[in-house]
Every structure is written in C-alpha cells, then in structure tokens.
Length: 333
Image 1 (cartoon, rainbow, N blue to C red):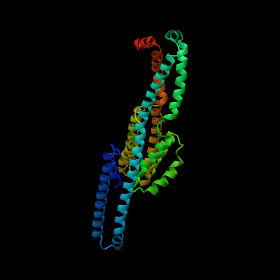
Image 2: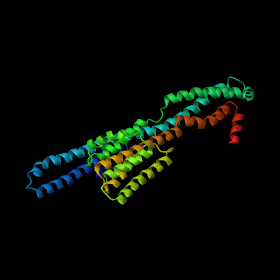
Image 3: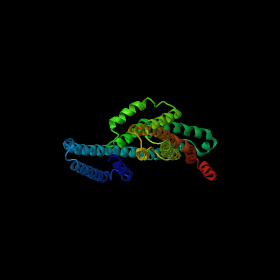
Image 4: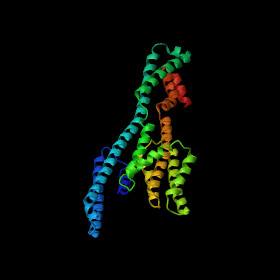
C-alpha cells in the first residue's frame, strides 16, 4: 500500500500550495480509505477461503484494524512532510524578495547620501575631488551592506535541514511496506558506522551486500546494480547542472528513492538489501544536495548581489552628485 500511495503522492503532490493543500488532503484521505477497503476485502476473501483455519479467523479483525492503522500512519506522515515542505518553499520564495528589497534599499541609501553630499560642496569641488567622492561612497557602502547582512537572512535551508528531509523521504517510503520502520532503523544503526568510508569502499560494500542477499544469477545482479547506478548518476548530473538556479527540494529526493525502490522491487532482492541500498543512495544524494545548496547560496546571496551592484551604484552615486560624471558613465555603458 505504501508504494502505491507514494506513487500517487508523486503524481498529485508536486504543486501543492497553502491554498490547495486542503483539497489535496481530502483526496489523500479518499485514496488511502479506498486502498484500505480494497486490502480488507482481500483479507475477507482469504478468510472465507480458509474458514476452517481457526488462527486465520481469529486474526481477521486485528489484521484489518492493522491495515487501517498503517493507512492513518501514512496519511499522517504525508501531511507532516507536506507542511514542512510548504514552509521550506515559503522560506525559499522569501529569499529572492529579500535580495530585491536589499538592492532597492541600497539604491535609496545611495541616492539620499548623494543628495545630502551634493549640497555640502560646489559642483566644481566634486569635479576636482573624485577620490573624496569615492571615499564617501565606500564608507556608505561598507556601513549599509553590513547593516543589510544583519537584517536580511540568508537561505534557511541548512545542511541539517537537508539531512532531516532525506531521512523523512526514506522513512515515509518504508512505512506500510514489508520493510518495517523498526527494521529500517536497525539497518541505519549499522549503516551509520560506514558513513566515513571512501566512495570506493562504499561501492565495494554495496556490491558485497548485493551478492550476499540477492538471490539471482550474476547477470541479473549486474543488471540491477547498473539500473540503480544509472538512476543515481542521472539525477546527480541534473542536480549539479542546475545547482545555481534551483534550491533544495525534498520532492526530488522522494522521486530518486522511489525510482531506486521500484527498480529493486522488480528484482529478487532480500529485504535487508533493499533497505541497505536505499540508505546508500540516500546518503550519496544527500551529500550532492548539500553541495548544490552551497553553490546556490553562493550564487544567490546578498554578498553576490553586493559584488554585482557595487560599481553600477557607485556610478549612480557619482552621477547624482555630478551629472557630468553620470552622463559619462552612461555613455560608456
């Protein structure tokens, strides 16, 4: 059930907003309710076919209640993740606005300072003292840029946020499958010891896990390994390519893990190997996402804006004090 609901979420939950989330939650509840009804019908059919088995009859109601409980856990997990994702997106949307506002505030401060400065000395004085004009601008710039750095926050998406989001992705994928959360947690405890391994050591470890727990021929084993590696490399390439223009989104991690999980589900892989492989992929993608977020922050930071705007605002400052300088700068551009 978890896999089917997860696929439904990927298809229906990629463009949720605060305005549409109520409708999404309503559809989610209907989808999960229908899935539970279908599963419980199959349970009733199974019991009917095995009516002579006392243990089957005895566990009928508890199993059906367990199905409903799993459905509620899935619904609760999706809603929790959706609320966190919406908050993250609100923070992301606020960042460009903050940079734009900071730019306008800088421009206004430059204009006001230039206006005041213009009336402290004659126009001929400023024509002969460009160095003093530049000194006045640099003092203003340093003071105002430091003030804005304190007022306007950087991206709220930290490395810890990304790690937590990646953990949520794999946790919600495991809920309701044959790979119980308790089992996944047990594997994570083992896996945490291996986090400091080199990429070569991790790859060797993953291959060993496949060969130990995968009940299949070597050809089939190589095939599933290649599929998983192909999925990971494709997404890594795309993430890196768009690092400067796209913020981190948990939905991307959801998609990657689902594709890997789906590839593993179609092969004869032991449950422990499934979880182990997903944790390996999750860790690798998490590392890439953290690197990409750093690149995004660097490219879209206030400091980047300051560097891009300083010379043009210096021309603006000079030109406001002395229009002949402004005209010359405009002509050069």
